[in-house]
Length: 277
Image (tube, one colour):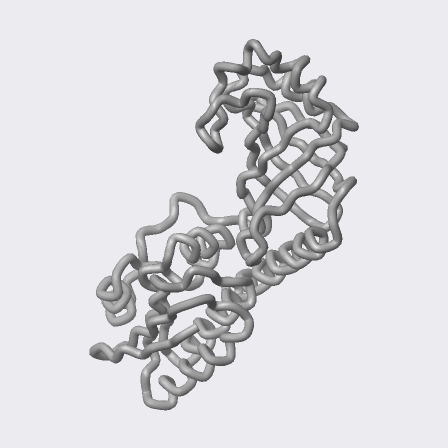
């Protein structure tokens, strides 16, 4: 990652470029400490060209924000890439380090102590910890799909991921609500299947094996795949909430999931400390 300092009147913009991971955290800390030694206490991190950021890097941003605040300064983020914005908002970091769409707006906030428009609701600890990324799933037994979604009926149903007909490769699209090394939880509203919550619950009943595919956005690993067994089913007015335990998962994927869960727990603690301290 490259870091370039752009002095402005009464504040400095640090332009970051590349992948911001654990290796580069000391470089950011050194850069900010050098600016502080030179009398600069108001800094905007421009993340427009940062295409990847991990939990340690997010923790470094929280630490830098706290250190600047102790010295009477302030840290904000400007022009984050889509990847960075999604991660920052997902974990709730924008509650501690505000985001602005331009360097000018970031500078105005630094100089005038302005804050962004308030969020419609404050992120809770559960919001910070739980990851609501998309999950693709399907019963491993094709007969179960055929029973609830006969081929003749699903031939006209459109796959929400790729936009083509499901044909024989039906996949449901749920939203992940929790993930750890033992299993996961997700919610499903039925998509365009036309199934009632009761029928969804029957389709994904206790003991059903599902093939799942999901992302771990804080890690460079792309999609993860595994087989899970449904352990809990909760019917809701608009769908079902499913808990499932991993039954088949390769060692690399399990380690990636463990690391992801650890990262989210670390960020939850860092954010709680930052907001309560």
